[in-house]
Image 1: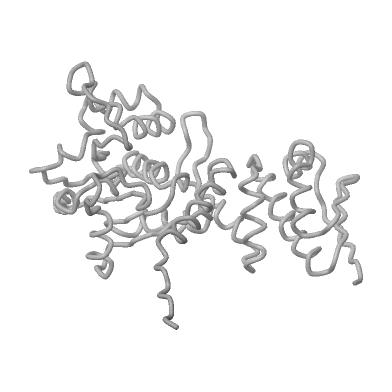
Image 2 (image 1 turned 120 degrees about the vertical axis):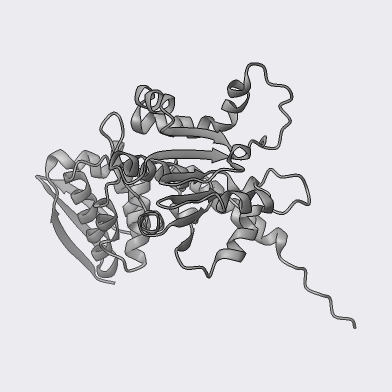
Amino acid sequence: MSLTEIIIDMPAEHEKNVFGQFDIFAKKIERTLHVTLIARDGNVKILGEEAYAKRAQKILTQLVELSERGNIISEQNVDYAISLVFEGNEDGLLEIDKDVICHTLLGKPIKPKTLGQKKYVDAIRKQMITFGIGPAGTGKTYLAMAMAITAFKNNDVNRIILTRPAIEAGEKLGFLPGDLQSKIDPYLRPLYDALYQIMGAESFIKNSEKGLIEVAPLAYMRGRTLDNAFIILDEAQNTTPAQMKMFLTRIGFGSKVVVTGDSTQKDLPAGSTSGLDVAVGVLKNIDDITICNLTSKDVVRHPLVQKIVKAYEEYEKKTTRPKSKRRRT
């Protein structure tokens, strides 16, 4: 087995960002691709088997360009760059990075970080109704929120409506004190968190007082017709089929709808059918409706979350697999 030596440019100011603290990212690339990386005088020397050395070159080249664009390289970036190169998609990470949806209050750009997220964002731009289905950490709600705020700021819609079913996550919380708003706020807190981060509490409160941004339980949608609005239904796996039908039939002219949910985390009573599952089967062949299925590959939280999601997916496949019938002898 002959070793190949490849040298690439890596400006000193980007070396720490690309290699990570204590060279943690460089070590991961070395372990995964069985190569050796040596950084010196603004260059990186890659030593290893030719095929793997070339893959390492492609990964590092993408990470350097991401760094030059002002990105802080994360472990998720490194893991995803490695997986894309193994799949033969050498420029996928750079293409995804070009798509800036908007900026947070602190100026941080909000972008899709995986191909699955990119397809999801593109579907929201193009379609009237988009379903974003996938595990925790895939950015379903956050990206939808960013798209809604962008559409609102660009005057593509007149208002934003955010809703979710008010169901406890496997617990009975009992009586909640306070007025009606205080009672429903705990269920809607994740939506508030995303709004505050992207547009700021002051801007949210001002637009909320004007009725331009509304955060409400799903039950409040009955009897309404929603024109010229960007509507997000979050945690849709906890709707009943009747609630889902009610919600989807509220849509008026000039509106855009995003429905998000995780089919593996239902909090409905045992034996109940999820409105999300029914809707996916009923609506899958209708034009202007796109169903985006995100997977553990699209998880952009801490890398451990991705491993947890994957472990649960494998566990659920095993537990739901039908048992083979034994042959009689």
